[in-house]
Amino acid sequence: MKFSRNGKFILPIITAFFLSFVSCSAKNDDKNCTIRFSWWGKKARTEYTLQGISMFESLNPTIKVQPEYDSWSNYESSIENALETGTCADVMQINFDWLYKYSANENMFYDLNELSDYIELYNFTLDDLAYGTFNSKLYAIPIAFNTAIPVYDKKVLDENSLPIPSTWDELFSIAKVLKKKDMYVFTVSKRHLFFVTMAWFEQTYSKKMFKENGKLNISEEETGIIFDFVKRLVQENVVYSINEGFSFPALKENKIAGSVLWCNETALFMAESEKIGGKPVLGNFITTPGAKESGWYLKPATLYSIKKDCKNPREAAMLVNYLLNSQDFALLQKNEKGVPTSNKSLTALMTSRQLESMQYKALMKIRFNRDSINKMIPIMEDNNVIQSFADCAFSYAKGYKQKTETAKEFLESVSYCL
Image (tube, rainbow, N blue to C red; front, side, top):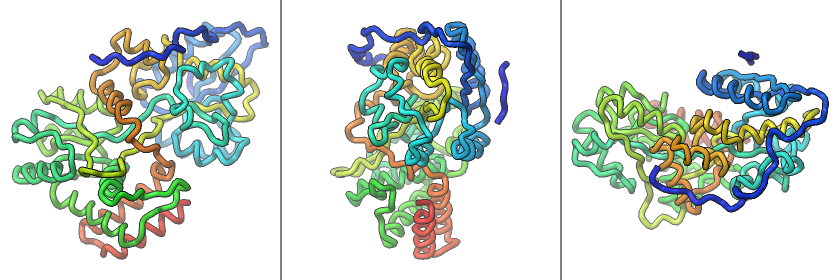
């Protein structure tokens, strides 16, 4: 890792916001200490985080924060070894599946319940905190939540007299019209192709693809049915590309009508669509009429945790509280990591009108549909599972391999990941 220091809706505000709270700048009579803090992200994230660290240190002069940051790919490749060897930072930004992967080791993460005098947990709902809780221990706190959601350039739809689809049949009907103009509905990443396909299968067959323990819940025959659906997505011009997710060149060249993105990525689509005179709009969670299963899943975008053997847990907790609940830091971060989970930080963005409209609407969709969106199981985020699914499904869709062969290959690969 590199080491460097250089809205029209009004969200109800929970009563607890008005209660007294422990300030991140609480008096610290201990001797000076250093807290290591690691995260990943692009240049903009690094810049505002370093600025926030300076503000935190000004409020807490006995605490020095040592920043450790890198790109996503480099961070991901190094974090596993750092966690297993105990060389990780005191405070870490972590991915959802890492938390599950290492939570069985009770010596990995600090129980943040024990630090509730320094972390304002009342800013989060019990449902929020449940995502980071194992065996009644709070190992991490979500920074923001995410779900995959379709977005469209309404200008493209309007020019072709097409509605925003709500059902799979409507989606394929739109693709049929666009195909005549050599256009596609979506660009998607491999990950989002997996989520879209899972939504269709679970809604259509009233059966979850995974059991609660993370094991696959589908037969070889059902896997073949799923791959047939992917083949249809490809052949009928629903899916244009699965390599890079949203493709601005494809939108600019009038090859696509939209994309499937994380909620916190919708601002990117909005900016690029408006750049070429488009009308970006948030789509609907596509469903099978009468479905008993939602098929769509919610996960923490990222989380903060503290390592178990942290030598200064109180000071680390004060930093976590600042990152999550400081309104000053919220105004620096805005919605770069997604719309914040913390009620206090969300309030700061709302009152200062800092919430970008499409992300705010995406947040509203999540909140209004919270009861019907499933809690994501970590295996669904496993890179090996997603890569295997995409490779196998497209080998069949493109005619390179037989359906039975690819179905067996995928089932075996997932079993290997467990």
